[in-house]
Image (cartoon, rainbow, N blue to C red; front, side, top):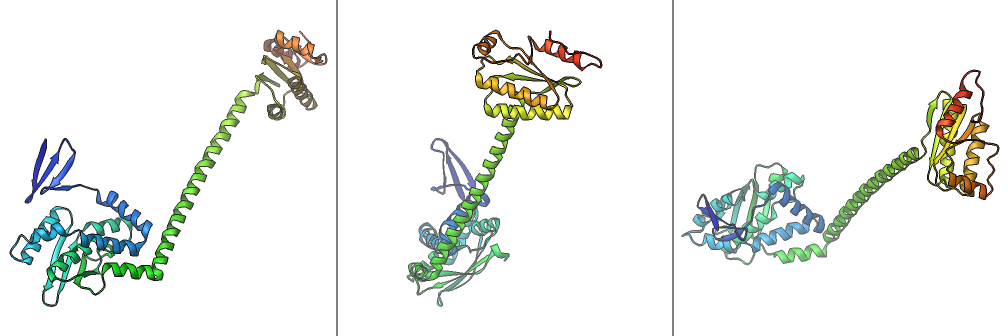
Length: 358
């Protein structure tokens, strides 16, 4: 299905099946000027440098005027045809063109372009390397009109620099575009362009690497905070009564975890002025010589700070293992449950209370 719309004298066609657009029978696209098109030009400029993109765009504009010239040639005179082309260009979003002067004998033309897409893109990017593509298009048109082998469009006003319009002086040139490219490559301008491109790439890579490092540091900080939170949750120290704290142990107690647990337990004893510390082993299902040694070290360290330790919650299987591997807990207070340990410590913590094993 073809949907049609008329804008000025131009018919726009949209093929709903192929998802394509045609304007006056020619395939066309619509593109955002200040984002998509500006991004395209910026990317090209970063890749090849300012001088090369100027020459490339000028050459592209010059070589793309076949349909423009055919359109002009439909009219009795060049001036009439160019005036009609100006109308079409405006409808296509190329801005307002104006043929300021034309001297066929001297082979000189002066053309202005207002609100053209190249200048608008460069305003957005904060740069001004000239409207080379439109200048090249004018050079190609007047090259055919003057009947010469090559023309050059010299830009003498720049909208991107704050002028009211872009203005071009078009006249024959003894130097072809290809000669200009060769001259650029033969001079240090090409080296400077390459260096500028390389420096831009390096700057971008450095920025990207710095951003990656910042993201990595943020992730490492987050992991460290999460690990700290996990350590706190895995070894919670709770003040269950005035002067009584409890440390529930769960899972495997290796050397690293034992060191962290000892540090947190001793800090809690000092800060809370605890006189009793209950180490609850209800969550420990398996114990070996190393784990038992870590627990005994916890007890001795706590007692050096003046806190009496009580071991609670030893499971039958754990008790059998401790006996079989010869762990001596005879000098420690051991009780069946955390409740028993709390009652024991509360009795000793009360003024005048006595400590006893129940």
